[in-house]
Length: 277
Image (cartoon, rainbow, N blue to C red; front, side, top):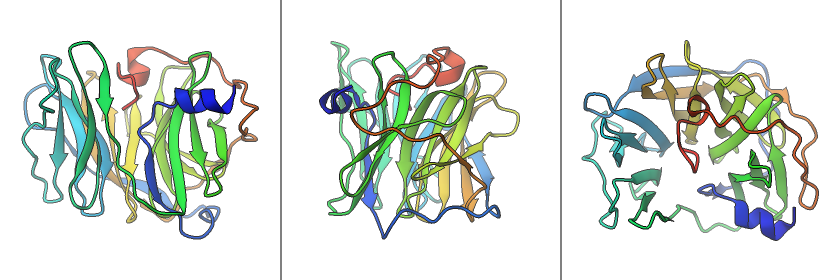
């Protein structure tokens, strides 16, 4: 696949943070990820899908109500929630919150009547940039990628056994979070330390866990799906660096044949969401 095609196929909202020094040191085995609490957007039957967290502990995301309408929200650091956020151009009931900065500026996307998605993304103007995201290859398979400070793309980023990988966000320590699906239909939270170290996190008792945002203090916002199919948000915290496993050799631009099995397209694997949430 040519570099131009790769860039065109990238669907991720890119999150750019300053890169301090070299990549984070390889992990010791003394760290862990611990759930702090769970939360749901108020209202019966709402599906809660957190996306990002800022340094103040504010979480942005979206919820889907019992009528299938999607609205953005902010859960503030004190535990209170914003009113539903609706883009004024949203004519079909689909507004997502995808990013939030320390000034509580929210980035998101919305859909209009012709079915097109209009979006914006949050970035910082810094000369030392690390970018993470995901792309879909010519076979319809999702892979993670990152771009280093020299502008080189590193891809695909796929844990062993993955049938589809999404990288969502990172912090100043270059700790990356996301999720991946396996061949059994389960979806696992993903903690990634570039260039190739992975750790898996599963919310207890759930077959769908997604880690969507991480701040510099190691706080993670994510979601899990319970046995009834209801999505719940949660906050977790990384203490130290969890034990990680090395991935296979990463692949570079101009050489990216698919190395994994086709994407599991079941609703349980991806939450009926494209682009990935």
